[in-house]
Image 1: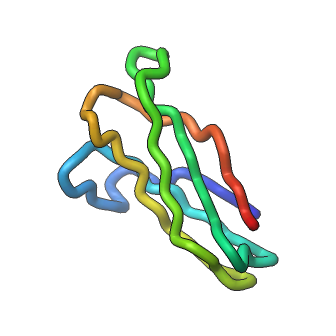
Image 2 (image 1 turned 90 degrees about the vertical axis):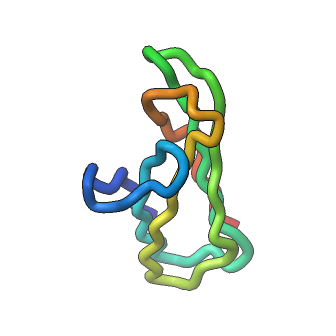
Image 3 (image 1 turned 45 degrees about the horizontal axis):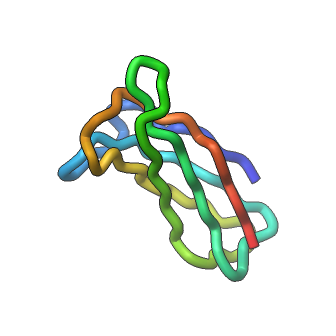
Length: 84
């Protein structure tokens, strides 16, 4: 599995600050793909966010948005990616 942040300007946030992550899932995640990140402000953790598209097949390209729904941060740090 490969994961990266999408370049700024290549996606649009709706209501809240967000980032988009892009994943390439080689072997698939038949039950669930889960991504979690800390929301940070001035380098300190102030919250968390997560996203899950459900199960994905082999050789899937996935794009997920992670949102700061409390609107308190200035950054995101990936903390967990699970595939099962």
